[in-house]
Image 1 (spheres, helix red, strand yellow):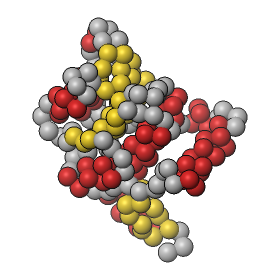
Image 2: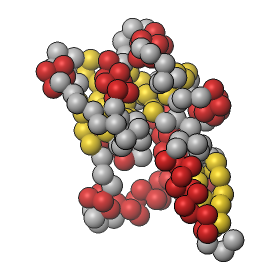
Image 3: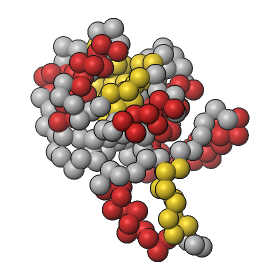
Image 4: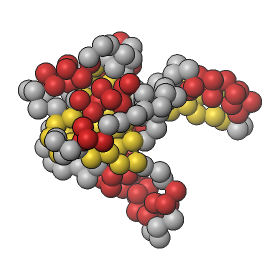
Length: 199
C-alpha cells in the first residue's frame, strides 16, 4: 500500500511490475495495484506454481525473472513501452534487468533484496529515460500521527468488501519459527507465513 500510493505515486492507467509476486508482499501488491486502477499488473516469480498463484490473485500476465533477458518479455507485454512502476524486492542482477523493463518516467520502489546480492547502478542510465528509484522503509511512516489507523482502516475495508484477500501459504506453531525463517530465506514459500503461539 505504502509502496504503491506513497513511494510510486500510482495513477489510474499505470502498468505495474511486482517482483516476488506470489509472496506475502507481492500477493497484496498485485491486488492493491488493481484496486488503485492499474491498467496492467505483471507478476514476476521464479516457478510455474508461483506464477499461477500471481495470476489467480489478479495479475494480467507473469514472467519468470530467472530467465535471461526477461525484461524483453515485459516490454512485449506492454507493447514495447515498459512498465510505469516496479516494486523491486530481489536485488542484484534482477534489479538491473528490471530497470530495462521500465517505461520513460518509470518509478522503481526498492523494498528489499531477497537474493542477498548487492546492486550497482550507473546513475547516468537513469537520465535519458527519466527513471526514478526510491527506497521504502516503514518506520518513518509509522511515526506519522494517524498513519497506522488510516492505513489499517483502508485495508480492513478492502478485506471486508472482498476486494482484497489474504494469501496464506503456510501455518506453523511458534516453536517452528526457525523453520519459518529457513523457508523464507530459501524462497520456498508463497503468501503469508503465519506462526501460531498457541499451537
